[in-house]
Length: 108
Image (cartoon, rainbow, N blue to C red):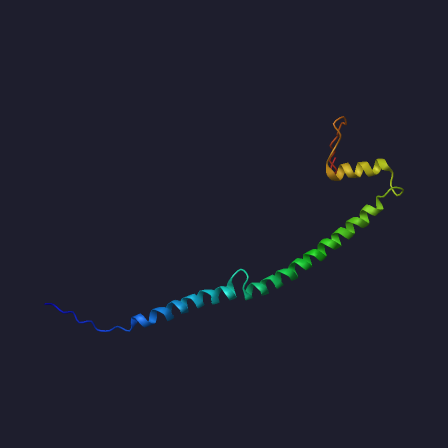
């Protein structure tokens, strides 16, 4: 009759703590570096500063354009001149119009 003698191993008692450590490490890592983690809060704050600066630039540009448009309101320019400037800026013409392209260079 054969008998097997086994030596007791201590590896079985390390399995649960190893899985718990891996589990906590995974969630701990993502708590700091994940999409909604602590570091992304600081990145969002930096992005907010950049976007607010861009918003201020856009508002200043809009106010400048509104001031220029105010100069083109009814009574300050003739409607024909306003129409001509709008067509030149948008590079448009009506289908029944003849468009003559001219060079504005000083060489003759």
